[in-house]
Image (cartoon, rainbow, N blue to C red; front, side, top):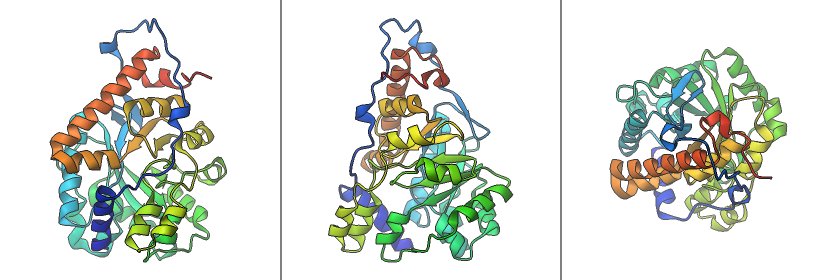
Length: 325
């Protein structure tokens, strides 16, 4: 698993692993020539899953389980603390099975106030994982919530993939009903439809729509099955469509192909409560360390604030629905 995690980072940085469209280019926000606002007074703060975020943004789970991953997690969590945004770690299965690797996920000591999200693959609920392992993932990093990630396409192409996804909706719902922390059902790049969202009894849904990182491409490169990876590279539901379908009944994280603060504004206008990003932050960090990640995130958040201003949205809540039909 250590090699696999390193492969994922290497491939994401060295290869073109983005595919399709998230659909944001089809969304137009409603411009107001007279916003009746002071840009400096636009309020980007939200409450999400019981935590206050200075901006409606979460750096999604990227990695963990290796020394290289430990540095990435700690550096990005430190920046999340500075900016007042959320942060998620990568899948913690490797540390549940090898306690010596727990430190590669631990960031609470340098990010005491952030919304911190633990992470396990939902597929593990079909492999003898249950409530105890979910609790361990949360306790390991003193997390505020647990993301159970849904990745059938990735598992189908991954050489070591787990393919038995039968009965998982019931098991995810059971964990959600018994865990004393919020549970997020999180897709990783193919999207969650209204049909599936309606059957999930969780505290939030991270739509993880298509149009961003394609795990079909990533695993295709790893398995020397590039043609199969390319065949399914654009598979799934575009993020903008997912948000439209899913929002309304449960808090929604809009992720998948969010590449700018303007994309984030569009996601929220469509109905998301906040947005999630991963690959752009990883690339900026890889290029210039914490300085590069800070520069990217500051630009991203400035773009979001400007989009709110131009739509006359003094708060994040006011931004919802400000779409030009």
